[in-house]
Length: 121
Ligand code: FES
Image 1 (spheres, rainbow, N blue to C red):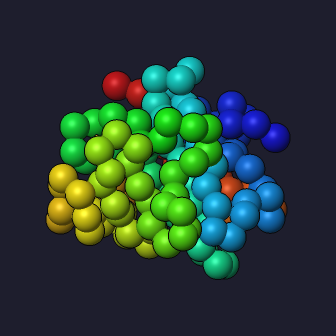
Image 2 (cartoon, rainbow, N blue to C red):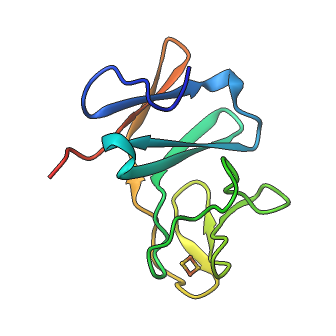
């Protein structure tokens, strides 16, 4: 399954939950690549965010599917080092403390992580 699979216009089937490392992350796209997001697994939980740093709006990752600090405990922005909590997207270090990543709703359906993405403008 790849990131372009979608069951509906506003939903993306990212991957199977059991394909994710723990901790681990996976990026995806929507709106033909205009929209970018990622999911992060932490234990039995998984979270989804837009791939948009709240500092100055860069994508968070430089390498495919790499969104976590070396110890796997936080999300990190590769541009200037903002550090975000995995569970809620809150910036707890770097240049934009107190700001939050844009969370996306998700559910696991038949073992697949399904993310609701914003409707096109
Ligand atoms: S754009 Fe992410 S830390 Fe600057």
